[in-house]
Each structure stands twice: as C-alpha cells, then as structure tokens.
Length: 313
Image (cartoon, rainbow, N blue to C red; front, side):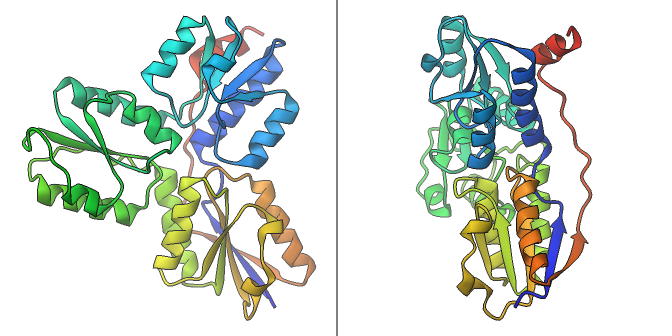
C-alpha cells in the first residue's frame, strides 16, 4: 500500500511548452477567424484535445490550411520548406517554436554555411529532428547510436560538426559526443549544450527521486521524447519506473509492495494530470512530501507578431 507520495520539482511544463500553449490560447481569444495548428502544438494528447475543444484546428500540413489563413507552428520547429509552403499559400504564421530549438536550427545553418558535415544526434522521425534536418538536408547526417557513429563516412573528417536534439538523455548524449570526438578528433560542437535546461533538470530530479522511492511514475505521453528519457534515467539510477499518460494508465500490479511512490512529469505534461494522481492516493491515506531538486525561473516572450496584436487590443 502506498503510504507516501514523493513529488519532485522541477517537473511538468517547461518555458517552451508554456509559451507554445499560451500562443494557442491567446490566439484563440484574439482572433475570430479559424485558427489552424500544424501538428501537435506539444506532444501531449490531453493538451491537444483541450485546445481542439476550444476551437483550434489541428492539421498535418500547411496544405491543409485554406489560402490566406492563419497557422501556428508547433514548439518543435519546422523546416525552411514548410515556411516556404506557408508563404506560397499566403498564410499568416504565428511561430511557437521553442527558442532553444531555434538555437539548434541557427547552429545548423551556421555550420552548413561553413561547409561542414553536420552530425545531428537525435531520434529519427521526431518532429524536432525533421525540422532541424530541413535546414541543411544535404549536409546533415542523423545518428541515433554509437554504432551509427562508428559506421559514419564523411568527405572531409577535418570539417565535421555536431548538434543535438534538445530532449535527449544527458548521459547517452555525452557518450555519443565522446564517440564522435574519438572518430573525428577535430569535430566542432555548439558553444553551449543543445540539451535544454528543462530536459537536464528533470533528468537530474528523477535520478534523485530514484534514490528515495520504491516506484517512480513519470506522467507524459508515449511519444514525448523527454518523458521517455526520464523513465530511462530513473531505471538507469536503479529505480523501478513507468511512463503513464494519466491516472487510468497505472496498473495495480506495479503498486505491490510499494510504500513510497515517486511522482514526476515530463515537460509537456499538464500539472492537472499529476494532481489527479496525487488526489487518488491521498484519498487512500497516502501522505504527500515534496522534493525540490532545482529551481526554475525561465520565461520566453510571445512571438512578436502575436505580441503586437495583443498590445493593440
């Protein structure tokens, strides 16, 4: 029986996610004509469903937006090709790309202009990776494993640079970078890590949580990269951990022999889902204790064109 819930901070929405969700909500309140969102604004079905119920229309492609319409780009960023297609359809774009993802795009463009082969450490098919690779598709090579690096062949081993997806495992990424440096001793990297502050903080926090919990639940979607990485980090630290989308996903057999339940959430999981789980176990007699590992105070400004519109209303 669960006697204590150990709720760790930081958890949940990061600054980029807060900004992206706010962009959609504010745009819905500001504009009266249809508002389209390309792909999931963040990787969480609960949030997407809520925003859809409020009037946001989610589409897979800018071609699904009527000419002259208004479209929001998700927090994960898009390729130049997508921007060009939006422009060709005379769409008004509100760009909710996380500034930390934009930083990686800028790095890719800078290395491409210097004629480097760019190694992107990331997960094939992830929205962020697709957008980043679109910045220099002829020069970017995606690697997911150390074996991928070992098999790499480039035209000029002296002109290699690397960038990374922002939501990767810190340890896995360090190992990948070490492998790159071993294969290409002169490889260049970004001036600061591409792994975002929130990804790092949540992984550090979940490792601390693993030391004090019989079981860890990470609230997040199965296709949320940072949430999946948190489960991996908890297990790597010796903890038992599962990813759950919400309260209904918790399986009774996981709780056998569990007295202290560690609870956290990925950067795209709303706090309401966490509190639903807390309330459920409190109703069964569990106490609540909070573990604060790091403080966060990062905020990102709204996109300039939306900010300008809001300022004039």
